[in-house]
Length: 96
Image 1 (tube, rainbow, N blue to C red):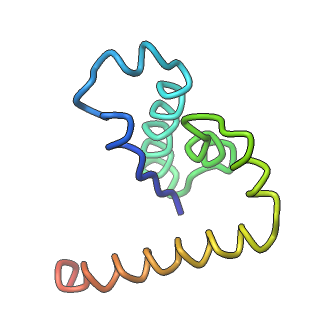
Image 2 (cartoon, rainbow, N blue to C red):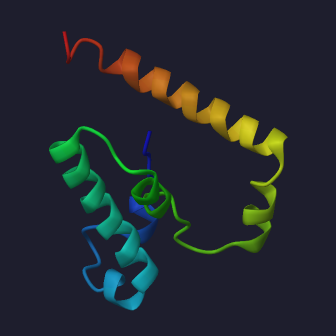
């Protein structure tokens, strides 16, 4: 599952020069476009593209280190699953 909620932080769509000023940001958004293409053409997203999509916008060494601990990954996974369930419930009427 791919999920990116940093669009507001990076002013996606508002600041058109942001991607030029931050090449890493441009690479991540290009990976998202590629993921959509892969999903549309093959029905799945490659692991390599998923890794690129999930790259950090801003490299924060402390956060990168934290993600190495199993209990932190477990908490992050739980939060992601909770969000996924919330979205599924919220959108249930739309897809019925």
